[in-house]
Length: 226
Ligand code: 0O2
View (cartoon, rainbow, N blue to C red):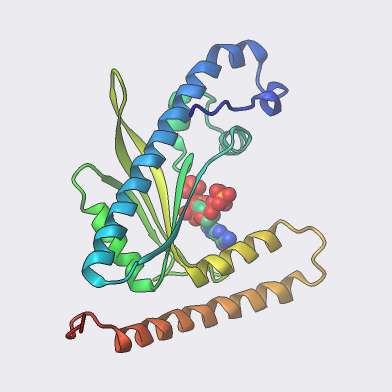
């Protein structure tokens, strides 16, 4: 179903004639990114199915997708000083299309990410491993920027998608940290940041302990009585 993007929040900031001239191509661009999200989501669901058959468990807990809003696209382009053209948006922004994959255990993140990056129609543009190298605030996730082909009536086009891989616990932490970051009336921000960092480290250790428990109780590799 086509999505109609609301430009009212942009009308005051972009010269209206320019907006009129470009709005159709903007809608086209957003449609292409939406298709790219669908392609990536399907690839990940297929891997989950196969994995669950072979390993008798699902490595993926859930998948969330999101399109960056026109207002956020505009804000980021302005902040970074890029020209406001479709070509420049596609060239300079990596996160117009976003897919977040929530995995059960840390090793699942790397397995699914590897299987995705090995697919021959996927081009890996960037890998940021904030699990091996967490951010100073404690943020952990594996980020991939990939280009995936979409096939339209008259063209094939590679579109960029940001895929974020996290465990359930990492996602839980990131959601709270994200909320706290945008709260203006936090009384003791340094203390909150310190506590969040401590929680991030505890969560990381729990993730690996849970993985160990899973290994020690796993039926894979052992005789399974049907
Ligand atoms: P939203 O609403 O999730 O989209 P880039 O944007 O790739 O050019 P950057 O900023 O270096 O440059 O990207 P990075 O570090 O890979 O982070 C991009 C996204 O990762 C963020 O998108 C967040 O979703 C997530 N992220 C990164 N760092 C943190 C963090 O410290 N805390 C939380 N909660 N999330 C983080 P947006 O655009 O910020 O938000």
